[in-house]
Every structure is written in structure tokens, then in C-alpha cells.
Image 1 (cartoon, rainbow, N blue to C red):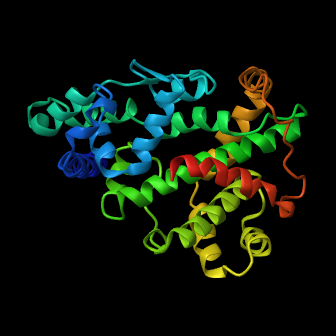
Image 2 (cartoon, rainbow, N blue to C red):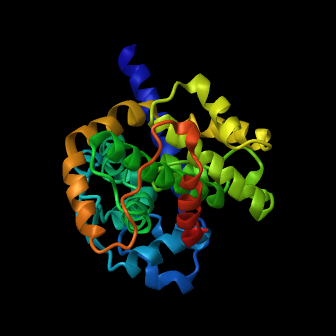
Length: 310
């Protein structure tokens, strides 16, 4: 009975996977973005056609002489070996294999195993990876003491995560869950309305997302985050409520384990690499406040970064 139940579950998962592939690859593409397309990176052409921020991120990354290496790359290798300060990003070149499987899964002896294999080697969002490398160059130099530096890292991460949310909004509520399930993007579009509002209101929403995400990464108790956001960003309580709800959807596995462990393991190396990257920078080292309720200048710096993308 257990084997039958497992087979039924696997068959359902395969059916949904193939449906997602068909939906995503059916998105119309524009040839005018062909110069930005990465060979054999699944759904790159579709995302370039759908999203202005996706295109802008690619252009910015190429403008800093960023490169890509088509190498089979799992999520675990990416987390442990990808150098966030090296302007080369590895990605798995499996577009042709994915397209073939989409149309010929019935010819495969074990299609569930192949689905699992394809998924395992296509879980890295190049958009997210690009943005890390771009953001380092747009921030002031980093401080040296460990706790100060880790706040700096969390601020940088909150910017990158906020850009993931903006990408989800641009891809749209209908398609973004499909692209997220296929691991082409990390976060789907929001259920709220701020993306359809004025540029000013959407920027207010983005600021609330940024600050909420920073508090999440700083491990502020979830029940206190909305109160903090309302205190720092008054007179926009509806925006704040929606932003906090969405920020709290960030994976606890990432916030409590992955992010913290990466910092503990690599913070000294990261500091050395950033010092080299910022050598000769005209600004002094930038310290985020110990009290997260003192946020003020941080929004100025964040908006300076967002202006490059949005």
C-alpha cells in the first residue's frame, strides 16, 4: 500500500512539473534581448522578455565585467563553493535536456528520477547571484568588527532579497509561482496591490520590505517586526502590514541556519574580499546602528541602490 501511495504521489508531482514546464516555456520571447541570453540556461529568454528588472540586473552585471561559467552546479556546491565576491557565476547548462524531457518524458524509463535530477541541478537563481555582486559595489566600505560586519552583510542580503520580491511582482501573480517552483526565481509575486499603485507608493512598499527583511535576518522576534516598521515608517500602516507579512515568508531554514552559518564560516574572508573591492573608495566605513529602530541613513543608501534597478 505504501508503494502505491508513493507512486501516486510521484506521478502527481511529475504531472505538475511537466505542466509548469509547458506553461513557462510557452511565454512569448522577444529577439531584441538575444544579446543578453545565456546559452543553455533554462527560462533565461522568457525572464528577459517578461521583466525589466531582470534585464537591468543582467546589464549591470555585464557592465562590471561579470562572467558566467556553464558548469553543472548543485545548490550545495553553490552554497559552499560559489564566491560571492568573484565576478564569475556557475550555472547548469541544461536547457536542451529540459526541453527534451518536457516533450519526451513518456520515453524515459524513470521520468520521476530524471525530473529529480533536472531539479537538483537547476536551483540557482542567477538574478540573485548577479545582484549580490552588483550590490557590493554600490554600498560604502564595510566595518571591521564582526558584529558590525554581520549587520552590514544582513543589510546587503536584505537588498538582494527585496530585489527578488520585485522580480516576482514583475513576472506577475499568475506566472511567478510557476517560475518559482521551477527554481528560475526565488520568490513569487505578492498577493497585495502595491505593484499596481504609483511609483511613489511602490517605493514606500519596497522600503518597508527592505526593513522588514533586515529585521528578519537580524533575528528580531517576528511579533515585534510590524511594531518596529510602523515606528520607523509611520503614516503607511497598510503598506507596512502587507510588507511585513510578505517579508515573514522568507524561509526560516535560510534565516536561522544558512545565513547565520555562512556568516560564521566566511565573515573574515568576506571582509578581506570587500576591503579589496572597496580599496580607494572615497567614503569611510559604514556602520549600521546597533539599535535597529535607529534606521534612517540606511534608507538613503538602499534607495541609491534601488535606483540602479528600478
